[in-house]
Structures are given as C-alpha cells and as structure tokens.
Length: 285
Image (cartoon, rainbow, N blue to C red; front, side, top):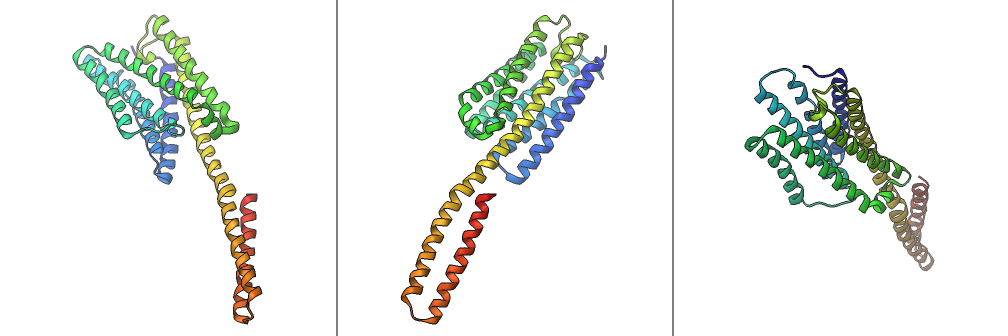
C-alpha cells in the first residue's frame, strides 16, 4: 500500500519549508559565523534530510531496508530538532560545547542501539519520547527566560507565545494520533485517516513557519538592541570626549598669542563641531 496523497503533500511542504530554513540559516551563518547560527543551519539540514527517507519506505518490500529508512528518518529528525532548538535557545541561554555534544551523542546512540539490540518499533517509540522531551525542555527554557525574551522581541513577543501554543497543540495532536488512530504508523506514512493526517501535518507546518518567523524576529531584536547600544551608549561617550577636546581647544586658543597655534586650535574646534553634528545624526537614525 502506498502513501496517502495528503501524506505526500505534507512531506513536500516539509521539504520546502525546511529548505527555506536551510537557506535563511546559511545566509545568517555566512555573515556572522556565530555558533547559534551554525547549530540552526545544521538543524535545518538534518530536518530536511529526515523528510526524504519516508519516500524510500514505499520503494521496496524488503523489511530490513524499510526499517533502515525509518530509523534514519527518526534519528535525523531528532538531531535536527535538537540542534535547531538549541540554536534558538542560545539567544537567551548559554550552553557549553560539552553539554551540546553529550546531548547530541545520546540522541544518536540511544535509538540506534535500541534498533540494533531490540526492535525498530521500540526504537521509534524511544525516538518519539526524545522528541517530546526536547520540546518540553524548550518550552521550559522559554518560560523561565520570558523576561529576557520579551526584552529582545519587544512588540514581536506574541510570536513566540504563539509558537509555544502551537508546540503544545502539536504535542496534543501527536498524542491523539498515537493513541486513537487505528492504523497508526510513525509519521502516518501508511495511514488512511484523513483527519489525523491533516491535523498532524498542518500542526507540523505551522510550527515550522512560526519557528522561522521567531528566528527572524529574534535576529531583528538583537540588531535593534545593538543599534540602541550604539546610539545611546557609544554616541554619548564620544560626545563627552568631544566636549573635552573642544574645551582643550578653546583653552589653548585663549592662552596663546601664536597665530599658528590659534589656527590649529580653530581647526580642532571646527572638526569637533562637525563630529558633534554627525553624532546628532546617528542619534536620530
């Protein structure tokens, strides 16, 4: 039995949205070289990779190959989700490389070990539990750092609230799919329940879209904070320095009878006034 057309459509939407995530993250990382952008880029890449193995499950009847496609799917999805959420949370939380690396190794080793030693279905269930755990940790981090996030996002704070609501909704839909859909299979790849397929893939698409929007608004918030720091702090300090220079120039001119010294003092005062006008323009930007 092949995939339902809605499942195929949902997977194609996932591929397109995750490809957009890869492009945006690559652009940001190429400009900044910051670790959070690198983690987000790798997260989107693994999420994109995870969208392809489900198609492979329909190309063969060999159970071993089907299981390999399935375990590749869930492991890549978990890696991508973990790296992406870690990168997003680095806007308001600091992690050591050891912590990030240890978590990544566990996400890779545990499901694969269960798959080799026990059964693919158990490995998939373990992977689903890991997905739930990653999302719950992210929700907890966002809630505990809500003041700092509000400070960064300001008027866009509602976006991350909306993302949290849809993440919770996604978990609810996931539980519904697992417990109440009669022909449940991971990802609903072989399911024929139209309502479950639509609810599952619509929630995935909305979470992905909101994740991209939150990322862009976090970047904008960071940019605005840096801009405010430049205009409010640096321009103020430079203004104070200029006042000292202008005061020194006025004193030199008043206490000297040399025409050469007076000419130099006039030049200092003239250039200081020009710099003062530039600072005013920076503050008005």
